[in-house]
Length: 371
Image 1 (spheres, helix red, strand yellow):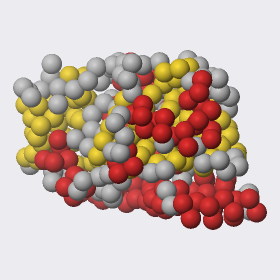
Image 2 (cartoon, rainbow, N blue to C red):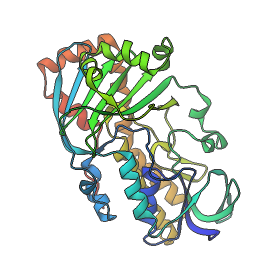
Image 3 (cartoon, one colour):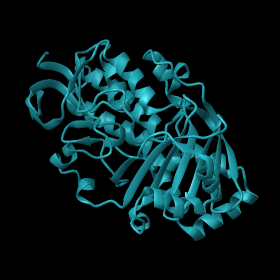
Image 4 (cartoon, rainbow, N blue to C red):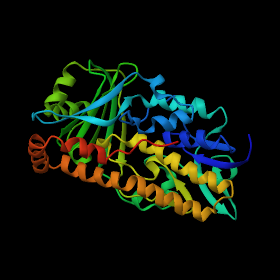
């Protein structure tokens, strides 16, 4: 294995793999990740079609992975009437198990992979020294794509990692009869759940809950039975849905605090740069789009068209211009959704002004990415 690279990417999720495919067209790239593929990941598994053209330019055809085309959105709270809307660009229901594997297989055509974990990164003149568990490597540029929280966040003393977060996420796949063309959002006390079908016909249930609401119950099954079923739609779901896995995937300490897309002359992409609230359904697309933006400016830097400082400034400005308003709307929507009186008021407005729901959805999504 080589020791010197043009680009080292810490983390091999959606953002890291996408950046690897893009940059390996012209440069020597290494992805460092502690886990093997394929693997299930915490995710709502709804991919907005805004990334379709860009992925095609990289040789990834998402419609070959899944025939689940989603064009409609449904929202419920308690026993209140259902609100529906058409999604502006639509999306694909595809599992991270399948999508990450497809990206990995494409990336490894030209990218090196190291099954390890990055423990430290230092900038030494014009190159970075990257330390893993048992390797010392160098690169002209390093990209961090380690997800929602990692040891590197602590190493870099990022402000969000110093604060405790009350959010817990739970994911499980089920056998359940559900329409292919809809993604559902169901609110309950202290949180909300997303339901959508994926490529193999199974249904993905992924929910976010405040730990204060969860800790009163012994386990996830008890919480599902006592709290989620207070929502009429979820009650009907759990009556007949059959879990596929022995136990769900869970992640605690999920932080929605504001992050910076650049830290210590390191580019952050995907959830490492900023985590949008799951109710927006735009996390997968944002991860891929952030990789595209970073790859554009890293390419310019490595081809000596701009300096490193110019690259960092351009990426940071472009990232904020592209994503800041989505993140802001996401924070606002989550506050509304988890506030009983505000949600009731929102229902009242949507009943009288139904055209508002598609507008709100559009604010949390982007336009189609141009390759």
